[in-house]
Image (cartoon, rainbow, N blue to C red):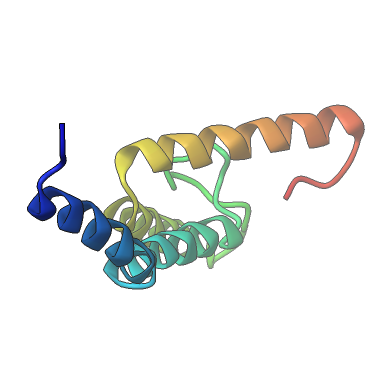
Length: 106
């Protein structure tokens, strides 16, 4: 049985569009997700993963909590929910391991 030329050309064009799709909007969305995640974690928000607290004290504490909430919301908007759950779980495991080993958490 012979494959029709239209089917063969479709599979060829699909594989040809693969690399260009990886460098397009999907890649930009993934990079945006990673940037939002890194900004949230760099803000030293509590490890509950919800942005409800901060590791700052004093008069800047309420401002830091609000910043954590904004960063968390941006993180959740930029990333698929399954990625957020994965990143949060991985971060919690890293922190747990760091605590057991007596290292500073990431």
